[in-house]
Image (cartoon, rainbow, N blue to C red; front, side, top):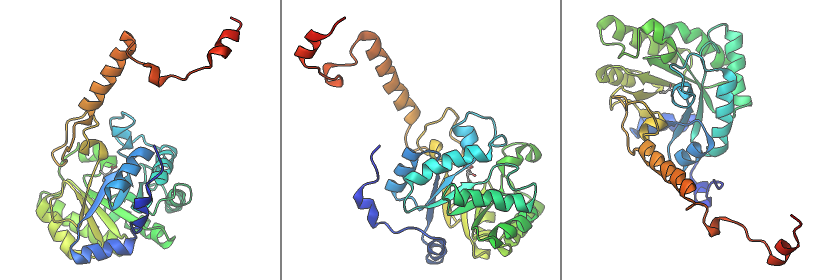
Length: 287
Ligand code: KIV
């Protein structure tokens, strides 16, 4: 992969105030997940506004059943790769399970590592009102926070599976209260995952922070999807909330199968894939 093209230098670096302005102007915000350098370059070249190194890393890249086992070191490893490819988009790092729940001190330390070592612009963490004091502590340390409510995959056992959240009155009210508490704690952005569209719309108009939806309808300030779902580079069925734009898995499988057959048949490598040697040198070789 070459370095980013000169043409991309013209794009302005997206800041948090820019995102607030986009919300104010009714200009939708795009977010995509990325876990490696080439994907980050693609997201940047596509002009995506914000890139999230999600702990969905566990499911889509590491082949795990959930995001729970993902560690700080694994996240940092991937964040550093993505940072090298993201130039102007806002880069968000997803704090893995138990990196921010144990104590506020640990939450600040780990969030700080995402900025200092990973080069993130913002960190994301899951949880409702109960996480507000932690969000406040991180924000007070000078680290911008994106909250995440609704279907929070790190709590999948407690939620009883990957289900839509906030459908009944008490659940929806809890979601509203959480969003307000997280905003009061200093969160600049919030992800709504799998909540009813009407609820996402109501919260979006009630808060000043930027709302990003995934399975939360069209009225959030922006949308996020998992890269592998968008390009069909996955073994899992496309989730209902995602849109698959290309079936990369099928295309890559076909390409790999052709390569495999070419090696077997000798069609690859062809002369143009090799390197010549002066015939005089060949002659002098002692074999
Ligand atoms: O981990 C992740 O990719 C996420 C997004 C789906 C919001 O949290």
